[in-house]
Image (cartoon, rainbow, N blue to C red):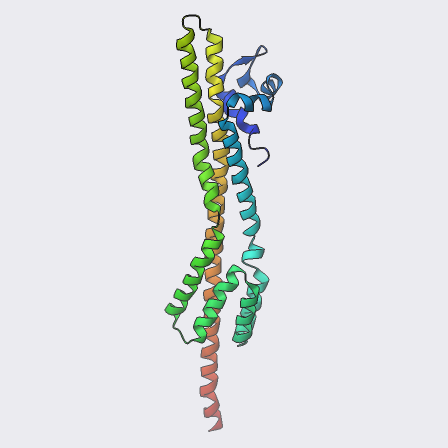
Length: 256
């Protein structure tokens, strides 16, 4: 996430209300940028800012990778599903199974499991169980690394809070050592600098939490759709069987 640190200024300006160059930081982002550049803010946040930055980069990279990998065209190709359905409805189950094994998409793996189970004369409950077993493995693949985004969302504010606590300890330690000669402006500056890491942690955590929930929801919808497609193949197979049996009964009657 290249711009993960930039929003750190939002909580700082809103909460601190410190005056710089005669203007209130809370009055707008422009005044803050006029008084302090991002590099200076990052430096004043302390070493833990690097940890937060690293977490944001890792979380952002994983989110983008999962976003690319979980495209419906890759995981649930509609044209492929329609092609398999057409083949199954025509009784070409062997060809459909071979095509599923060659495709290697997640939905292809589930439909292949359904076709294999049906070919071994399994009942509907057993077919569903076979589909769910393969589905669990595919879910693990879909969820791969998603927890990294959730971990970044959970850990970032804690890292920021740790930085703030350390900063506040240093501020009050300096207060005790210099009392009664301590200057209020220096004391206030130390406090708002200590809050920078908390602001940075929250700035990373909020979008990471939203990204995590987005990926979870997307995965859930894809999984449901894949299972429906796989069981839809079973419905087509059962319909084809019923039709074949009906035609088989009609043939002797017509011959008589």
